[in-house]
Length: 89
Length: 239
Image (tube, rainbow over the protein chains, first blue to last red):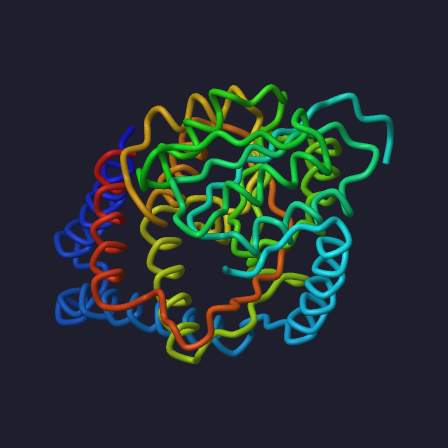
């Protein structure tokens, strides 16, 4: 099944629940009408929160840059021994 | 590591990577001992003499270990992999970038992970413990996180790093997935992994670090963001 269909199916299911809530008056109507807005706001908050957490915990590796420089000098040394010229002519 | 009889083909597309290709070949040979492998360099007609350097490396390491499979001009990343794949003799194929943002020291962990789990694809991820990036501005990190949250929410891909391109594939799986991909650039990498995930292939992840050596140049400008969003919609509709 195409992924968009899965999302649409999910959306339809949630809408069906919402409509049935409206019909049955299980919770006050005024509240039910606000639910979609709450849903959108919650989704937005979730997105912002995930980006925020991701940014705060963004893994960085400054030590890797130093290790890489070492590896590069080691490789350059070897290439020089082999007589391979790698620098632009 | 237990006895490993598999052969691995490393496909490295290059364009003006005269220095980097030599460094990477040295590091691959340094870190991949006791493993049968070949390096396939797909060079898109670099004017800087990348191919001459590769030929010299062939003299050092052997023409059966380093294969130069050049193309006349710049023809794109996706087709570079298919091109390299045609010449690959290994049961597994590893694709990596030539600019050293993918360090060959992680190759053993890809191979080990595959052997332990029997996975069809092992993909490198920057966003877990043990992984990471270096040299990114706050803006670049923000864009990357935003793009990732969007993709995770909309596509449910089952992998944490969609646009990374340091990956090991079972050869037949790469052939299958690559033939159904049409995107370009790094959307291509995302399409590959999403399609593979939808096809039900077993995908595992290993942490990698990513050192960006091209400081000051943001690869994620406005047009890239638009391309990314288009790619996202395309994948939503077709996978």
